[in-house]
Structures are given as structure tokens and as C-alpha cells.
Length: 209
Image (cartoon, rainbow, N blue to C red; front, side, top):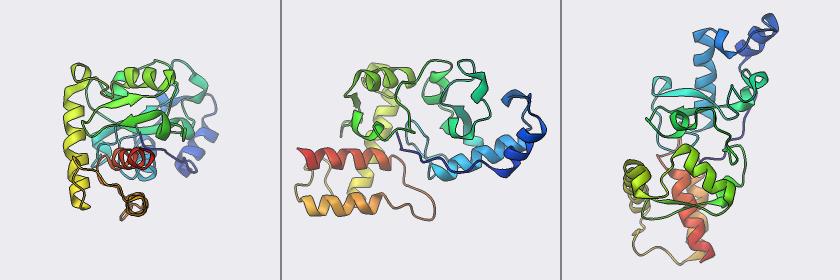
């Protein structure tokens, strides 16, 4: 997951809510839905809120309610409850549906309670993290989501190689690790490379080992 810091909701949404105080997300015009999605994508540096793969444009994702609309209808128009999710079948938003999500991208703990591995797998370090991996089908075992695990492994390794690190050997120099984490944490032209938060997570685990 990428830790998301939600900003101010789009002004078009604010105006529409004021003019339609008794309506919900289902009545929201398409153009405002697109504006919400574009704002969410920008906040997420064009990465899926859950799996961190690259999202090219608003047609490759959807507005995802972290607290599902069926669970809390009062938050269907709450911008702080909406992120952009990829459209991958049986994963992320498509897998979430209306299930409770105990660990979310809005919590900084998602960086410490999820541990990503060079193999491409992800491990939950708390009960809520384990449950979240299951709900979103984020690939704790190959039998659950082999495609995501392989994609995460390949693109994460490629990003490490690009930065001069052999994924199989790692890096023991703490100062270099800190510098690399800092560099990767800075978006370039408002975007991050696919799975950048995953690679940062791996580097931080090397620091702690």
C-alpha cells in the first residue's frame, strides 16, 4: 500500500453537495466522478492505493470507497473516504467490494504492518494486516495471486537494479540505504515508478535486519 495524505476535496464536489444535500454518490454526475478520480490519482502519484502498480489514467482505475458505501452510506460523498484503485479483476477494489477493511492506505501503520519480500510476496505482521491482505487479495501466497506476486517481483527488482542494487545481494550500507529511501520517496513530475512503496518497504526491512 501507499500511505495517502488526503487533501481538500475538489470544488466541484463541494458545490454539488451543497446543492444536493440529500443525494449520494450514485446520483453524482460523471464529470465530477472523473474530477474526484483525477484528484485521487494525483495524491497517490499515479499508483493504485492498494497494490501500488502504475495507473496510467482515469480510465484505468475507479473511485474506491475505503469504507464501503453499503457499510456507511453517509460517507459516500466524503472525499477523505475515496481513493483510486486499479481495475484488476479479483484484486484491490474489485476484491474489496463491501467487506470491512481494517488496515487502510490512510493509516501510516500500513508501512510497518505489511512486509514485502524480494520474492514478490507480502506478509501481514498483525491480525488486521493479514485480514486486509485477504480482503484485497494482495498476494501473500502464489496460489492466491500469482500474477500480482510475479509482477511485483519483476518491477521491484527492476527498480532496484536501476538504482544500482542487486536484489539477491541486498545492501548493507545504512547510509546508502537511507539516501536511496529518501530519493525514492520524492515523486518525479508528480508520479512514482510502479511499486515504489514496495521497494521502500523492502529497503527499510534491510535497515532493520
